Image 1: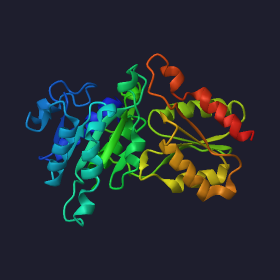
Image 2: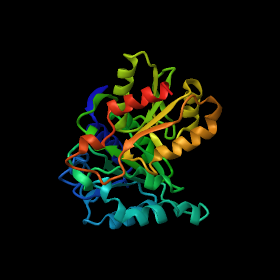
Image 3: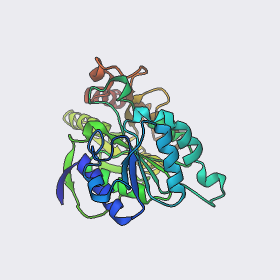
Image 4: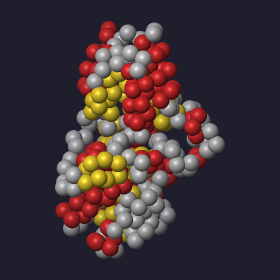
Length: 325
């Protein structure tokens, strides 16, 4: 085991993939010698050459169009969108091409070798164009998988699983944790199954559910709640599409309460889908309404970032509201 931060873990997963597949290519804005704006691809161009790790023009639609074509020929296409905020010019290529390739051909051809990496979320004072969390836009699209890691160990294992999966995967990386989150990570290859949530800690009174950077927040809230005699079960969803309804429903059946927290705005965020599904599955077991602690329905504010992002105190207030209902 080596001590890595999330960037090192992602770089390790990409390195293993490049060594494993002679046709694998990494491409995006500044991913070459510069190593990407966050340095996630540092050293890979020097190791594998400019024909396999290369910069693209500043055109997200072009990046994804090229990625679809490369993946359609069977080569592992490792595309980077420099910030998730700028994935929207590529929206048509992803939802109308990547997601539908297999379906429209009756499984005669596909782009299952496609992995789209992109940093999402706030915490770096990036303002409205470098802080968004757009996972819910893509969760509405059959044919895609969506994955969000919370720490270096998860990042490497989930990224390797995403690359090996035979469906196109969008891999959202919580940029606030790139260097802030560190931990022991195996240097060798390993994978973490997609579509499976992880029960991080067990509890009896209320279920707390989140993903990515928000996991740190709900774990802090659970600790504060335990000091007040409230036992929280903490779950990391990890995969947004598909999402592990069974694990969440099992937990809520036990605790009778659910609080979902995500950084994206509350209206039509993915927490709404979770709340609707769980109330349908667990209605007779619920002791209080399902609550959502999320970002606000406003563009991401630079000056008021701390007020915008759901923090541990907001989650703690929701926990108390739930158990006192």
